[in-house]
Length: 497
Image (cartoon, rainbow, N blue to C red; front, side):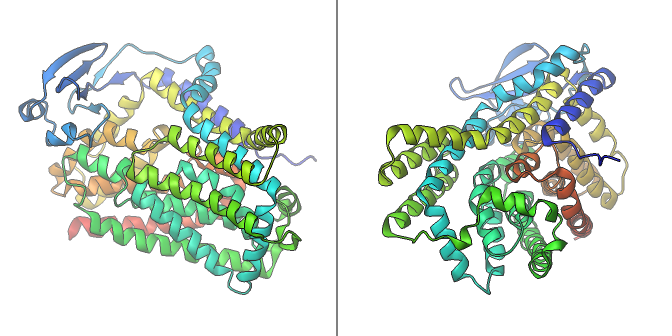
C-alpha cells in the first residue's frame, strides 16, 4: 500500500483558506467603530461602517469614547494604526466569501505581502552570489574546525542572540535570511537541519513572545491598553530568561541525541537530501583568504546594518531589501564577477527562495479573506464576552487561550494589539487585576501559538529546508506543552501577587 504523504505547506495553507472562506458563511459579519489620528490636521477620524467623522484630538474626546489611552500616545506616534472603539460592535451585512474570492485570495495575499516577498527574493539573490565566491564553504570549514568539541556553544549563542533580537525589536520575518546561512554550519557540526531550525525559530518565537522593548508588540499593546510600556516589564524579562533557558535545554538534549546517533533525528529520512542541498562544507578545500574574509565581513555587515536600521532608524522592508541588494553588488565587485554571471547567479539564487515567498503570500491571503468577510471583529466581540464573571486566575488563563486562538486569524502582532487591546484591557478592571497582565496574556498567547501557527512564519521557514510541517510538530509539541504549563503557572501566580 502506498504511503500517504503529509501535504506541502502551500496545500496546507490553501486548505486553511478554504476553511476560513466557509467560516465567513457561518460567522456573522460585524465591525467595531475605529479611531485614527490625523497628524497633519491634528484631529481624530472616527469610522462608523462606511462613514467617517472628524473629531477634535483632545483627551476629552478619548474619555467620551471610553478609550483609556493618554492623548500623547497618539500625537507622539506611539499608536500609528486605527484602534477599535470599545462598546461599538454592531452586526453588518454579511459578506460571505465564495469560490471566486477563495481563488483570488492567494493572489491578493501575494500583492499585499509584496514587501516581504521582495526582501526574501533579494536575500536569495545575495546568497546565490556569495555561494559562487566560495566564501561560505571556506568560512564554514574554518568554523567547524574552530568549534570542534564545543559545538554546543553554537546552539546557545544563536538562540540567545536571536531571542535578544526578538525581544528588543521584533526580529521575526528577518530570520528567513538566516536559515540558508546557518544550516550548513550546523550540519558541519554534525547536527541535523532541525537543530538549526530550532535555534533560529525558537529563539525568535520566545524572544517575541516575551517582548520587552519590542515596539511592534509590547510598546504598541501597552499604549493601546492605556498604560506605560515599562509596567509589567520585570515579569516579561523573567519570562524571557526562563523561557529561553527552557528552549536551549530542549534543543541541546535533542542535538546531543542526534550527534550521538543520527538515526534519532526526526528528519533522518531526509539526511542525504538536505546535506546535498546545502553542501558538505566541512571538507572544503577553499582557503579563507583575505578577499573571502572581506566578502564574509560585507555579508555580515548587511545584517548588522539591517538590524540597526530597523531598531534605530524606523526602517522597514523597503530599506532592508536595498541593504541586501547593495551587499550583493559590493560582493560582486570584490569577487570580480562579470555582469552576465552576476545577473544569472542573482536570479537563480532568488528562484531558490521563490517557494518560500509564495508561502508568505498565500498565508497573507487568509487574512485577506478574514478582512473581506468581516468576521475578525465578531470573533473578538464574542471572545471578550466569554470571560464575564470569571475568577481572576481562570480569567487570565482564558485570555491566554483566547489570544492564542485569535492569532490563528490575526497573526500580525501590531494588528492584534490595536484591534483587541482597547476592547480587552478594560476587562482587567472588572476582575481587579492590572492591565499589564492583559498585555502579557496577548504576548504569551500569540507567542506560544506562533511555535506551530500555520498562518504565521513556520511554514515559510520549513519550506527553506523542505522539512514537513508534521516533522516539525513531532519535534516541537513536547516543548510547546512544557512552555504552556510554565506560562499558565507564571500567569496564575502573577494575578495573586
